[in-house]
Each structure stands twice: as structure tokens, then as C-alpha cells.
Length: 226
Ligand SMILES: Nc1ncnc2c1ncn2[C@@H]1O[C@H](COP(=O)(O)OP(=O)(O)OP(=O)(O)O)[C@@H](O)[C@H]1O
Image (cartoon, rainbow, N blue to C red; front, side):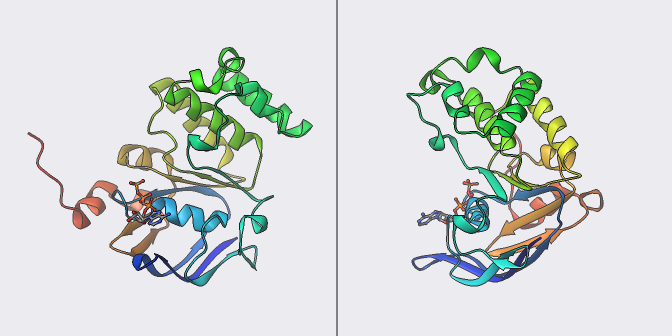
């Protein structure tokens, strides 16, 4: 469904990744890992069409993605809380949804126990509350492809488990790609892994055959724990 053909991406003269080829599965959970600044967010933005690739192509169902217009009905994404309107309440954000999306939103509001916070303005939300509102909105769009940038890093253990359970339920029908620095979550949640390091992108299609900590340690020097 998503096919990445020899893409390279540079910001001015700074090369982020070079000659990447990937064929992503049409459903399942893919973790995106790599050190700070490796290019995880950039890759997600290229898949959404927010960022243009410098060369190569990304295809969605055999059609090249040129901009967000090409992914609008197929890809929903969670790329940070700056997309929220701070003077509006959580409920105001739901007004953007269609009737069927609202129905789905109601289901997730119940599952995540979010009812109480929705009447409050987003500016009064904690980081985790903003994250939960974004997760709610992203899931309610019911897209076939869902991208989450640092999805669960800021959630408390209850919300983390609730979100992980929902994603596990959805993975048979959707492709979910989430970036994370928490290797434990990667092992627990994902079916496959994209690892970005030194401008190179590796894809491991079966996480059960992979030692994620070992992979990371092979490429990134880690300080000793004192
Ligand atoms: N809009 C931009 N203009 C110029 N350089 C950028 C831009 N966005 C990202 N970069 C650079 O591209 C590289 C990759 O950044 P990116 O945000 O994709 O990394 P990341 O893997 O998501 O990092 P982190 O784990 O810290 O979130 C970094 O060197 C960053 O400075």
C-alpha cells in the first residue's frame, strides 16, 4: 500500500536519509526508532505529504504522493500538540468530525474515559491530556493508515495500556506507524520495525526475530549506567 522508492531527503544541504526503499505492509503496527535527529519525524512527514522528498517517490496505492492532498482521506497523523487550538475546548475540536466519525469518537471517549476533560479549554490541559485528545481525534478519523509521532512517551501507565490495547485491536485492519524512543514499547506493541541511523533506513519485518536493544546498541554508543 505504501511503497517508498529510492527517496532521499535533505533540508538545504543537510542530508537526513539517502536512497531509501521500503514496501510497508498493508496492516499491522510498525515502530519507527532511531536517535534524536535521525529523521523519524521527517519520514512520517514525507509519508503524509507535509514534507516533499528531495528525490525518489512515495506511492500510496500505486499513486505518487505529491502533497497532503494525496493522503487526505487515507492517512491520519498525530505529529504534536501544536495542531490543537488552545482557546477551544476538547469538545469544540470534535465539531470538525462527520457524524460517523463522531460516533467513533464517542466510543473512544468512553474507552479512554475522557468525558470530564472535554469541556475544558485545551490551554488548561496537561501534556498527557493533550496527547489523549490528539489520539482520540486521530483514531476517530478512521483512516486506513495512522501515523503517531512519539505516541505513548508521555502517557501514564493506564492510558498507555488503554492506547496499546486499542491499537492492537486495530492492527488487523489498519497500518499504524509510531515513532518511539521507548524500546520496551517497541517490543511489546510492534510487528515490524523501521530503524533510521546515519542517513540509512533499515526495515525488519518480524519483531519477534529481532533483539531491539541489541540492534540499537550495535549502532549507537550507550553510556554505562552508574
Ligand atoms: N524544517 C526543518 N528544517 C531544517 N532542518 C530540519 C527541519 N526539520 C528537521 N530538520 C533536521 O532534520 C534532522 C531530522 O530531524 P527529525 O525531526 O526528523 O528527527 P527525529 O528522528 O524525529 O528526532 P527526535 O527523536 O529528536 O524527535 C535533524 O537534523 C533536524 O535538525
